[in-house]
Image (cartoon, rainbow, N blue to C red; front, side, top):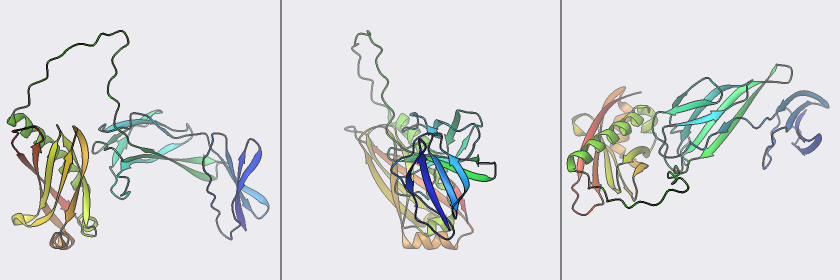
Length: 281
């Protein structure tokens, strides 16, 4: 029979129910220095000490495309990235450096409400017990740059409104990033969903409509989002039944992502751009 004890400052502060195979213990919080003891009958068969690692830096904020983190010197990074708060399967994949602290570089910019995460693995006890530590951090907007103390406020002239060509260029860049995020998904994975959340970088306040079409313009899905400020936001694209059927049947399929962005400025014209991706099963 097995159970877990959580030991803090030498005293047992929590004990799990006894089970026949494995033990699980939930506590409100862990503190650096806490020790988990795993019992086989009445004998301690393994221990693991928590040192407060890993940590995630405050630069895990929107719309950054990277963030820093730290790990235990005896642990290595097993996984890292981010995902929307309501869809942990839609992982914003990443690569990371090997140092400590290390940098996690994401495939797409972070959005407000995303959850950044880091998973590390190492050995504890006598080198025979594997231990995994996980840290989550909810993504908030990056803070605005502060004015240095003593600097007097200055009066500035409002910048001129961007031209149609400038807006269109930014829509092209934004839809390219959106398409790159879509490319990370598989056709069968998409076919099982009724919607997919895709990022779009708003260059200014406004409304965007995203449409997904397959070969010969067959509709797959569409979605809209209105943003009141510049920055990367998530657009929920609803997939049609016919679109999901098309994705399910295809081993490979060319999909066009089209974005039509209408700035909130009075008199601004809608600007459209498209990007193509090839999805695989």
